[in-house]
Image (tube, rainbow, N blue to C red; front, side, top):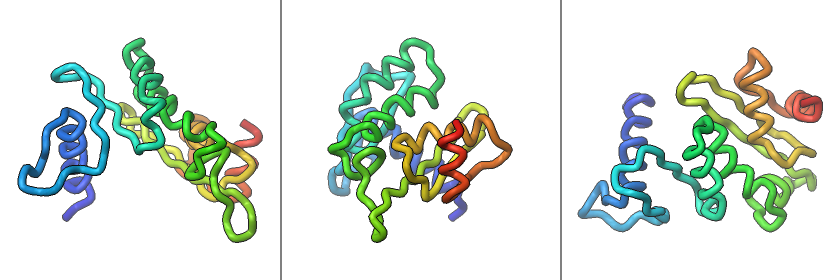
Length: 154
């Protein structure tokens, strides 16, 4: 299976789940929460469980005409700023050396531009640095000390 076919199938399945329909009626229920919206919504935001509390902020940005990437980052930055969320950002769990290293990648759908950071430390909003990589460099990904220096400079 080609990556493009996989991603297309994933997008259709995700949209179906978000619309509240079961893509595979004979199979078990999805473990993901479906947030009901108006019938035939124009905008759909899908997130992990730790982003549920921030969906409304992202959706409001979409309703207000904001860029889709900015709306997604509004949702993602919620868990990143939460010291009680140990999966990302401020509350992220440290590695074996006691250092919290973060990764983030994003893609702006309309322009197909992307940015990513890996092994970023001393910065809680890795998603904002990934966006800065996309907007302010000729690179797609920065890793380690270079990513951290870039993030601190930004």
